[in-house]
Amino acid sequence: MPEKKTLTIDYTIYDRDELSDHVKHLMEAAEKAIDSAYAPYSNFHVGSAVRLSDGTIVKGNNQENAAYPSGLCAERVALFSANSSYPDLTIDTLAIVAMPKGGDDYVSAGSCGNCRQVMIEYEHKQKKPYDIYLRLPKNKVLKINSASDYLPFSFNSTSLLSH
Image (cartoon, rainbow, N blue to C red; front, side, top):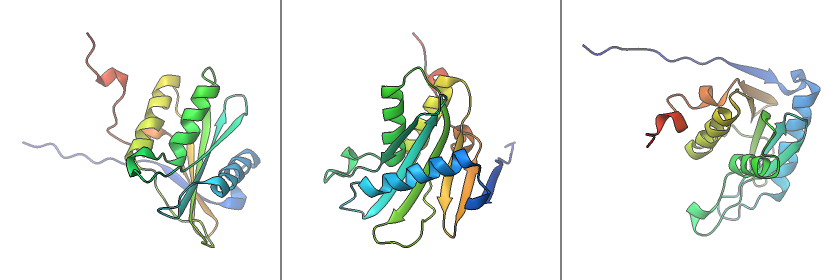
């Protein structure tokens, strides 16, 4: 007989002015990262910022390419850059914002599956979760408590067969 189960996650929606100063600062860094996004094909600009354990902030933005699979999302640009430049530091917080070119408000834009899997990889690597903040329209911000909440049923190195 099949066994039916339900999956739920906890998340919080804030007004932007309710955020702590350090999260506001990180959101501002992600918002500024939008300015240098390279999105000539989609005209959809995404900015991301990672706060590391020592307070360092690393920004990223989407980088498109005419050969679509060759581009990278803002989240992966920021996470890869953070790990490349600061491999011994852990991720404390990740902020993500999105706005169509010429838009007048941020839009809800959940991360793609590839980005969520990369978030899982770094959470597994550092053996502790980190907060993820997504900018929403009308000055709202959604907080997710971990990458594993953002991508349930994910896999990591423990899922792979060892030799």
